[in-house]
Length: 326
Ligand code: F6P
Image (cartoon, rainbow, N blue to C red):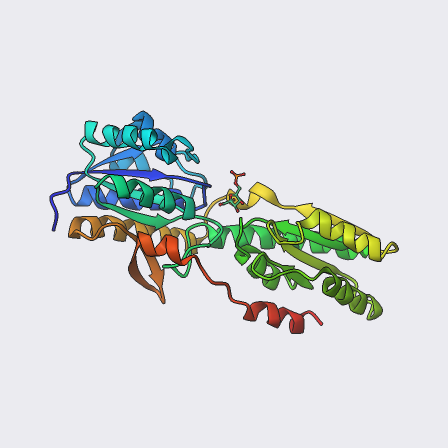
């Protein structure tokens, strides 16, 4: 057990549905332990500026179902500088904050690791990102909701694609990771899925369209991740049009709708478990780790390993859709 008294909690990087549920769990668990909680607004930028407030259990009432983050979020360039980190640490000292809960993704934990090289303060990370581009947890908060949002949108696109006999190239988010593309693509019965983790051979993609055209397949949906090496939905569409001038082709970028909306039950449960676990870990003296869920069990992985290991993608799903889309 430690003698932590005041916990600071922040959300950083791209927001993700379920962050509010995690904040709620952190605040209520801390209060249960008799701790004070400070909500730090706008991530590390708010830490630098001392933009924080004392939170009570009622401050997190009625937020478990809300997307976004009541603490707001930011990607702070200043925090990447020595001066910025110094200011942030001084603010923590000024407010007697003696532990942190950091809710965010890869960039958040990279920033944290850099900060902890210079300053000592107990901290636990919670994976909150729609991209799922982290090791140490089977799922990240917001991924499930984002995939469901993409699925709902692609289903709608399929309706209109079928009505017009059109081919659609749909671009989804994911930064450098193909998880959203892969999972929404499989769930929507996409004819092809292009992800950053696999080099895209556009001639293969076009050959597959050719094959489908010969068999008079009525709908052809290609889901492409935003950072696929061939260059996104517009470029894929242009390549299709160049080879098949007779085809009616459209592209659609789903964009930030994937980051908003009410979190699914899975994201709410995950966020609640991880918020609860993060504070309990701090109280028990487990620090500089990220809380995750692996095989339905809460596990803690050192932050240094999280940023070193990256993540791996399930290539089997790609092979599977080649069969399921015939
Ligand atoms: O990390 C979440 C994410 O939505 C990525 O999928 C995407 O590449 C990026 O953030 C977009 O960032 P911004 O909202 O700053 O444009």
